[in-house]
Image (tube, rainbow, N blue to C red; front, side):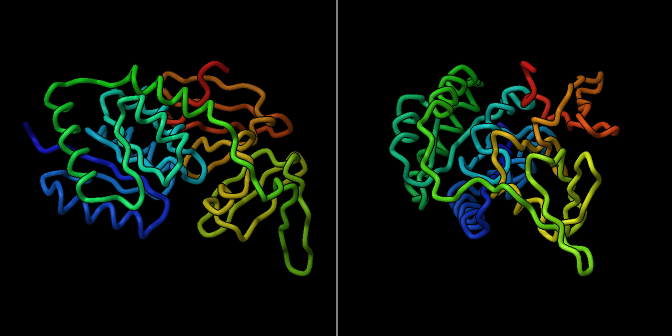
Amino acid sequence: MSALRAVVAEDEALLRQSLLTLLAEVCPQLQIVGDCEDGASALETIAAQQPDVVFLDIRMPGLTGIEVARAMREVSPRSQVVFVTAYDQYAIDAFEHGAVDYLLKPIGRERLQATWQRVQQRATAGQPDGALLEALLQRLSARPAAASHTPPLAWLTASSGRETRLIALEEVAYFQADQKYTTVMTAAGEAVLRTPLRELLDVLDPQVFKQIHRSTIVNMKAVASVVREDTGKGRLALRGRSETLTVSQPFMSLFRGM
């Protein structure tokens, strides 16, 4: 059997590097074909690389590990998933009953060795775990919402010279990454934020704002329609804006059922 290929997705740089180092020690024959700091880049890398296994943090900005895993069933159905999680009894109970591997932070060498052996066995047997994974994702998605001590973000500020504009989140159609800055688009025009797109993902309501491309976040309430193109990509029409937005192919699974 040829060397297995893996993608690692973890938003905390130190934890990501720690896992990469541990993987190199425990399973040196494993080929790392991508390491990602957020769900969007993870999904695009998985779609492009078609890895044998993905080590996937559950909590990431933008697309969560659960959303990435669900989208993987369409873009890379033969990839195994190993979830990485901090202590969470609800999630652990789901994993234990779901027959899908998980690693608990901080990751121990013995646990990783056992997980690696199971990954190899499944790869040799060619056993896709799609049905088991979907059942697990359903349980995780149904988990009680954690209480948040941070009120929902209602306003953004955009500065231009001496002027500071206040922009209500409900007025935003979409955000577009522009190097170190982010352009915010509304029906009334556009403005530049000094906040990188990735930092916005941490404060936006994930039920309302969805990433459709590595560089684009859209307000789902501003979406008028979505059309699937022959290429597998999508095209969004917006309320209050004349332009359309491209949904990259890996993200189209998020619009299934619309």
